[in-house]
Amino acid sequence: MRLWNGDMPYAKEEVDFEPYLTPYIREGATTAIVVCPGGGYGGRAEHEGNVVGEWLNTIGISAFVLEYRVAPYGAPAEPSDVQRAIRVARREGAKYGIQKIGVMGFSAGGHLAATASVHYNKTFYEETDETDRLLARPDFSVLCYPVIDLFEYRHDGSRENLIGPNPRKSLKEFYSLHMQVTDDTPPAFLWHTAEDNAVPAENSMLYAMALSEHKIPYELHIYPYGCHGKGLGEDDEHLCQWTEALDRWLKLMSLK
Image (cartoon, rainbow, N blue to C red; front, side, top):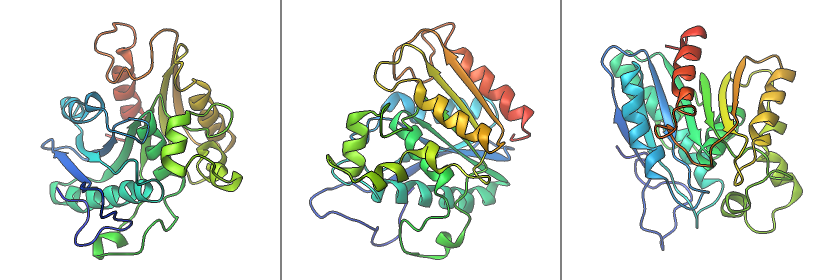
């Protein structure tokens, strides 16, 4: 499913890629989630994309897996893609009785999902059609070992691919998403591993603390073992519990 109609904003003639959504519609679902794979803003990890959409179907949720732009694009192309994806999901989901739209991301995709959650009211691109008049604010977010901080606990590759090698301080602050949480930021489910050497667990902790300061509901799981990029965690009998925990949280929060 094409993300943009006609000319997409911030197009690069030298790059032959057009972002798109792959829908996974579950009959009877009232909730859908836009899924953003990780990849350091330099690629899109296969094990964090379509397989996640398929799994969401098994717990009664529809999904729209987003293949967004990555380097050499950089912001604001990626934030534009996720903002547009949420709007397209609202438009398409309405055809199937979907009432709530969440956003989910892994690693750098988690940063993109969190960007959509805190900067939903920012104009990343000019309106292109009627779809762009739909609400861009997600109803909730699911952040899986996300990049959040672009200062002390940053992931260098993600930061450089998104905002360049020598970004000004104000830009780093804008995309350090725990600094941008407000009273209207949607609730979040977060998980990380303490052994993550690529994206430190402090990223999730910082976002959770910011949500707490604004009295926004959240659930945070820090698992003791496991490397970065575990996806659904199916090969780890302990880590795989995050999917069950997410399902319970969605029910608890009346989000499915």
